[in-house]
Length: 154
Image (cartoon, rainbow, N blue to C red; front, side, top):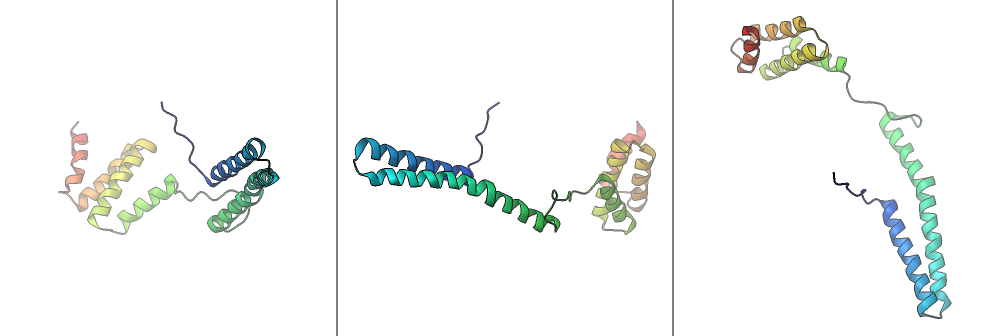
């Protein structure tokens, strides 16, 4: 299995830029030139390099986390809420499609999904069959329901 490199982020870009500048100016100041300004520049970039990590770690990241909590959950504490629907939510939604007489396509797809949930997850084959029978009464010639005819013949 091939490992993919970590995505390049703002923190990594800052480290590379400021670290490279620090090393370059220190190398140039120590080995090539007698001018102390190169070493001062190396020191300045070194300080910026350290401040970059501290600023991101202790200011930017916590503010970003706080802002995401505010915009997602409406509060500034705790993890963001789980907004994925539960299995019961899904069943209620699909049942409502059948009860409210949605379009033919929506009713048939809802019945197929409900049958699968009742049969495989809830382990209730009679309820699964009743869902298909209910939609089959409305649409007796629906080609999408033919797969359930084979199950009855077996």
